[in-house]
Picture (tube, rainbow, N blue to C red):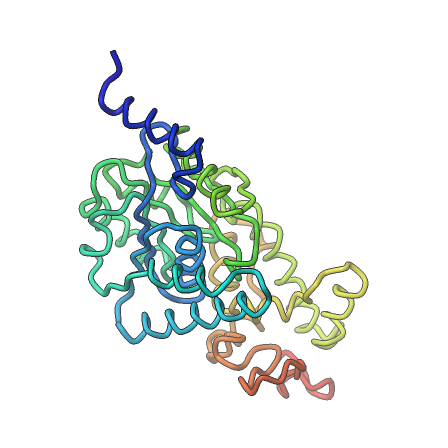
Length: 334
């Protein structure tokens, strides 16, 4: 005789096979309908957008309603671009927006979540505090995922009551466009949870890659030293900003040069990841370039601040303008 849970799973699988259910993920005991996304910044609003577009109910939570309003405005603008390009129709745009609810109270937003995706600031203390709270707030069986780009999933899981249910789900920016999702197994993450998240990423039309929990995982362990080396090349006067980026675009077929990419990621984020790599491996090759440290200290964080290796005026002009700080007649070591 089948137990109630088995009957429920078989019934849902039957409905899914006949196309009645198209956006639910059924994998072992996990049944995903309600997704909570913590953080409404660039990554958070992109993650919320993507889940909602694929039919999930999304609770987007942040500290202020002002931040949440900006996030909804950003999502709406991105959906408008998708409609203009013919990627989605107006009906799907409206449906996507209707599935996103905003909250400033974490307990209300996460209490009924099947999956929580944390996309807060790349700061270990903040993430550990959030996951400790989530462990008390969320229902039994909820999966807790972090979008961290470098911080140890094992460390994050260690502050929760059920570390087996904690995993990394590292989306790439811009989330609605980029296919890759790094799925990071912590030391205690179960096979069930890993398989569920791998399948969930596929439901979002992403390409999930399973990796183990070591500093920087795969993407940033390779990418950040390249960006750091590009900053060193500028710092040491080997070449200018445009020249360095042109070499990598025209010679290595990169769609964006490393310095422009660093601006796009956020120089503060690049610095934080390099510090995690340097601390985690104790290898000098990961030590952040002094120029990068100075720029972040001065508040020049790239696109988000309007100043980085390039200037971003927000005027709609797509032509890249190198910051006057890096005029070829000046020293980049200032």
